[in-house]
Image 1 (spheres, one colour):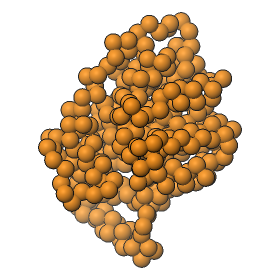
Image 2 (image 1 turned 180 degrees about the horizontal axis):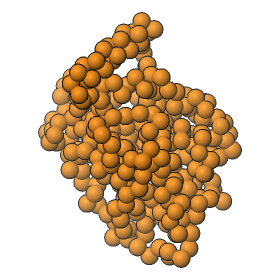
Image 3 (image 1 turned 45 degrees about the vertical axis):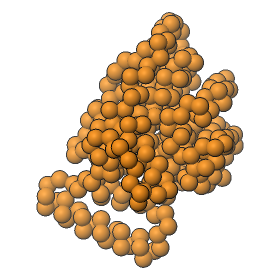
Length: 313
């Protein structure tokens, strides 16, 4: 299991919570607050979304622990169909559902007496960066968005494929639906082992090596985050543009944080170009994609805190 769940700062407390998204699916979350927080006042709040395939005990716990010490009320959660959240069959993914999970977090936070409804923001790590932008494009209650190592899963579903290859992929996944229907359950092929791996396979290269280094080793391994989703989930992303309307987030601000060595940087660059002002691009030196999951020496928490406070002013 990931070590993050054991690293709660002595000044922070964590409470397990459950609430439902608008589809009625129960979501499992953790609410982080400073132990000395005045519950008679209304505070700034942030939802932290996990990397695509990740769970609340991993990167989100790192962000929540730090931001709660800085006075924010922070909600982390497992996406529906994953981890401790509800939804059957397991490991189903959908761009609409995963974006809705973020708005469901806004619902939950806004019902807490100690949260200021006008000061709720979202931080999306990796794939949740795309979901956060998609949610904020339509949910005006989200007053600020921060993405870290943002990954646009809709664009990724077609990345590097020709028209012919896209058609073949659709045909393959459409045929898989027949197999799933005949079996009575969808195909799910995990990417990472049940137990932490001791070494990274030589054939793992580039960003896939980074993902393996985080999810498959003791650094970030968690039994609820073995990677991948049901095979036919990919069809939804091929048919849904997460970032089509992110310019409509304006005049609410967006900050994109990306490592200068991240192979995924082009996703943040593309989204930054699409977004309207006010927007910021923060490039972290000597930083790879997964460094922004858990490396507190590289995650720019000071800049993040200033950005959120200024956005809520």
